[in-house]
Length: 263
Image 1 (tube, rainbow, N blue to C red):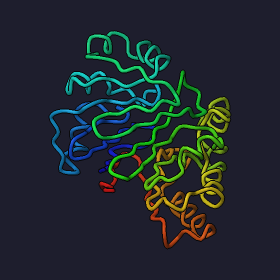
Image 2: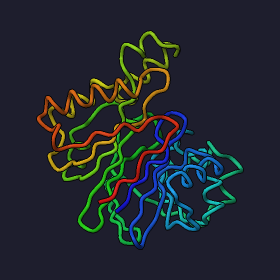
Image 3: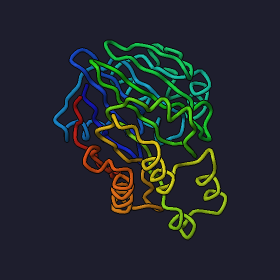
């Protein structure tokens, strides 16, 4: 299984998952031109995908969805409340591009090609937000961003993963003195907002599963965080957990794709 994080952040989110038989996108937060440019940057030129999965309807996760559906003619995997929200968020652009919708539910297992997918509920201020785990050929990876805290059930879903993509959205002090209106700051800090560096560090020290060989911290705020701060705090937490020699830390910087991870 190969994982390519093409974008992770408030300006767009997009991940490509592949095996020898199957290929699909998770979220479509970039336009067509930028998506193709990011694919070219990792030496990928794809003419088809087996599906497109959307975690929730916020624009940084779905703004490029109509273009990707038009380009790849792929089925859309989405929960019913999120689909309804997408139709409101993307009026006129979405309906005519739909080539088939596979309705999913939090807690559901389903298969796309040779990849087993599990959707699970996360706490975020969206219609029906989900995270995903993916299993193929004995490997497991998880994507969980856009959540205000780490419920115990989410931690359970992340167990046994080889690769975890987790948000480390903001530094609390930077957020408090930053440019956002107070109402937005309260939203970000709330239990349906986004994970802070401190919450992520605590999760790493207390709950990071020993199977995780690659930890990718992403969805970094461009106004209220900095990749180097995320990197320093992540390494410090891994040291505190005794995982520094066993878990590789990668920071997904805004507006730049990561390397391709293979399992």
